[in-house]
Structures are given as structure tokens and as C-alpha cells.
Image (cartoon, rainbow, N blue to C red; front, side, top):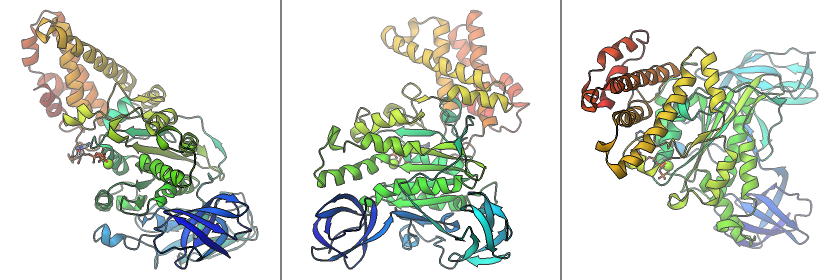
Amino acid sequence: MGVVTRVNGPLVQVSGLSEAAMYDLVDLGPDRIPGEIVGIRRDGATVQAYEYTGGLAPGQPAAALGVPLSARLGPHLLGGVFDGLLRPLTGAATWLGPRSVNVAGDQEWRFTPLAAEGDHTEPGTPVGRLDDAGALPYLLLSPGGQVTAVRAEGRLPIGAAVATVGGDQVGVTTSWPVRRPRPFGDRLGETVPLITGQRVVDLLLPVARGGTAAVPGGFGTGKTVLLQQIAKWCDADVVVYVGCGERGNEMADVVQELSELTDPRTGGPLARRTVVIANTSNMPMMAREASIYTGVTVAEHFRDMGYHAVVIADSTSRWAEARREFASRSGALPAEEGYPADLASALAAFYERAGLVRALGGAAGSVTIIGAVSPPGGDLTEPVTTLTQRFARSLWSLDRDLAYARHYPAVSWTESFARDGDALAAWHVRDGRAAWATQRARTASLLAEADRIAALAEIVGTGALPAHERVVLLGGRLIREGLLRQSALSPADAFSAPDRTTALSGAVLDVIDHCLDLAAGGTPITAIEEHDYSPLLRAREQPAARVPGLRDQVLAALR
Ligand SMILES: Nc1ncnc2c1ncn2[C@@H]1O[C@H](COP(=O)(O)OP(=O)(O)OP(=O)(O)O)[C@@H](O)[C@H]1O
Ligand SMILES: [Mg+2]
């Protein structure tokens, strides 16, 4: 048994923990506040406490538990709301508003065995399945070895054991140290998009399944709305939404909306494919530090069952600030802007846990990581933003001017990138959208050309530009207004499936091409602007009758 010797915010010194090892979990004081050993000297250990340390005092007991900080993984996660250490937030129902927050006390699942007594099982292969209406099948994976006992089909509660394999019990829940990546077979070479339903992302700046994306943006530029749209609409099997140091009411909204929307795959509420980890700004700061790792661990766990999981973290800057806070209290030598020197390696290690892999059991699964970055004062040269840009394969940089003009999502097409963009466009072409790659290339080059001409027009005046240049300006506006702009609040347009996106970009490009032809034929610009494009668009709408509102959307952008 150890003794608390000093308390400084979340930093607690403990002596007498002779057996303890780095990263071991420690119970502090009579209230058993959880903490983690982050430093050891001969005369004592430094503990990072995950809860408010008010009331904790020197002389109080401290006990090392001999295990690292671990998450309890199980079927109860789907549809639940948890804190940064993955404990059910029993109070969530009150602070998130009245709704069914499933905290898995009395829940039961229907169990179906997938292995028989005497079977030899490889690690990671399923020994059984749990079903619950409205959620994906939950697979119970083997640690590897001979099955000596397995439960019969039937209902069972969360604490139950389902099988004995290689002398080990397989339970409904298992535990995993959150800072250690879960093992997998190997990384897969294919490049498959994660469909987000956001046109600017899917068409211009896509992210791959198993990829990483970062969303830097100043105050109020739309980071949270964009991430919530992706949480709602992306084509993942499981979404882990980590609210890290952000506003509690936003978490309440997202949970509410998810429980009202239907998951097309299961027919259940979308909330049942979602795991919410809430460490809002009013909750203890240090649990934010853990919540990022907890979130990735949950996603890896579902990946291992052969699912595609997405981790959405809002915001990784708050996580970095928690690390900075702790480092400064522990007297670590600060590096850039006070952040600890290991910020780069910590961020790299976090994004490194994304990937499309062959799981140990043989199934393909993925973890995609999408993180918001909130640079103080919108300064994109600060350390968290610049480091994140190095590790993310897609960057959706939010532009203050676009947000100010209420052009949402305010993703800048000049400051953003998608390193897998070409490979992902090729996937769409193979998937039957033949024009996708050319539409993407033309859209991007027209936007760039329009930006260049707009800069010129600011000097010489629009009136001095030749007709072709003025049509490109018009085309740029058409792409921005008719294609890239997409309101999260519009029920018909909040989600744009790839077929809708390609139909819309085809229509917009048709109109632009027609305008360019008119200009080349000598038609004056005013006549081009006032030309009636509806017959052209009507022809476009014929094969794609499933794209309602296409014509209106393009015509509205022309006005
Ligand atoms: N895609 C969108 N469609 C419609 N409105 C949007 C969209 N994105 C942002 N907005 C508007 O912008 C407001 C601010 O967005 P949001 O809260 O997502 O910004 P933020 O970058 O997360 O801000 P903060 O820095 O405070 O976290 C929203 O309340 C909404 O009115
Ligand atoms: Mg926000």
C-alpha cells in the first residue's frame, strides 16, 4: 500500500508503491480516484489522476492495481454513452436530456455459438455471436486454442462467460489496455473510400477507409457540424464519437439526432452503431487525455470483428492541451508553445492506429480516424495544427471567409489536401461512375482558374475581362453554389450519395461547358448569364431520375 505525499491538480506524488510499473493504474485516496503512473523514481511515483483531486491529501492511501489503464469492451458499447475511461455515464440521461441511454446493467443478448466443443480455433476467429435488435451482430473472438466448453444458444447477461478456449474463459466482455494498439494480421493495400455524403469531401478531398483526416478551423467555422454530419451519414459499421473538451449540449444534440435516424443496414436507430465517449468541457480535464486512446481501442475492437469503424475526435487540440497542462505541472521542459516535447510522437502514434487491415481472425476491417483541430485564434501555424498536417492523409481546412459567407461546409479547396484522392477517384470509376475522375479533375482545375481570375478581376475590374474569363468566373460560382455548398439542415441534401454527387457535378459541368461554347461563339456575357439552361438540365435529369431537385439546385446557383 502506498501513501499520497503531494497533490498538485491532476499531478499526484505517491510513495511506497514498490511493485508498481510504468503506466500501472492506481487508486488514490479513500474515494479511489483512478490515476495512472507516468513517472517512477526510487523514492516514489508520479501519478496522473483522471478525476477531480479536491479532497485528496498527503497521508491518504494509494494502491497500485498491477494493470495498465484498460477499457472494458463488450456489446453494451453500441448505443451507449461513456466517460473517457469507458465507464457508463449513468448521469448521461440527465445531462444529455431524457432518452434511452443504454448503460448495460440489466441488458441481455441472444447468444449463438459458432464453435463446438473439441474445435481448434485460431486467435481472432469467432466462437460465438450476440444479437440484439437494432444492432450489428457482435462477435466473440477466440484467444486461440481448443474449445473445451461452449454455452448453448440462449439469452445471457453482460457478466456471463460463453466459452472456455485454450484454458481461458471467453466472456461477453473483455478488457484491453488502451494505450497499446490491438494486434492485427497485416495492412491491406487496397484503397477504398469512406463515403461521407459530403460532396466537397467525397468528390474533391476524399478519405480512405483506414485513412486519417484532420479538420482544422478557427472558432465557429463548422468543425463540429461537419464531424457530426459524418458521424450520421458515413458508410461505416461503427462510429466512435469522442467529445473531447467540447460543449456538452452539442453532445446531447448528436445523441438525440442519432437516436431519431434509422440505420439502413439494421433498421435500428443510428445510435445503435454509435459509441459516444463524452469528456465535455465541464468534466475532468485529464480524462480527455485518456478518452482519445479509449476511443481508438473501441474502434480497433470492432475492426477485429471485421467491421469498418470510424473514430471522430472533437477536438484533438483539447487533448493536446490536457497533455500540456499536465506537463507544465510536472515541471517537464516545455517545447514549442508550452507543449511537451513528445507531442509529435503522441500525435503520430494516435493517427498510426488507423488502418485497413486483415484482422487476426482473417476478416478485413478498418479504423478511420477523423479529428478536429481548434487552433487558438485560428492560427494554423501553431504546433498541434502543423504536426497534425504531417500525420493526416486528408486535410479539410475550414476557411473563415467561407464560413463568414455562410458557405458550408466551409472546406477550403486551396488549403486542403487528400493524398489518396486519385486512387479513390479510380475506385469510383471501377464502381460504375465512369465520369467521376474527370469530374473531379475538372472541378478542381476550374475552381483554381476561377480563383486566379477573381484575383485578377480585383485589379482590372470584371468588366475588363474577356468573355471566356468571365464564364470561368461564372463557372466557379456555379461549382461553389451548386455543387460544393451543402447545408446540414436540409433534409434532402444533408447526405449526398455518390450517384447524386456525380449527377450533380455532371450537370454543373454541362452548364459550364455550354456557357464556354456560347462564349466561344461570340455570345455576349449577359446573354450567357440569362440563357435558359433548364432544357439542358432536364436532359441530364432523365437518366438520373433518382436525383430529385438537381435542376432546381443548379438553376438556383445560377441566379
Ligand atoms: N454544414 C453546415 N450547414 C449548415 N450550417 C452550418 C454548417 N456548418 C456550420 N454551420 C453553422 O455554423 C455554426 C458553427 O458551427 P460549429 O459549431 O460546427 O463550429 P465549430 O468550428 O465547431 O466551432 P467551435 O470552434 O466553437 O467549436 C453552426 O451552429 C451552424 O449554424
Ligand atoms: Mg465545435
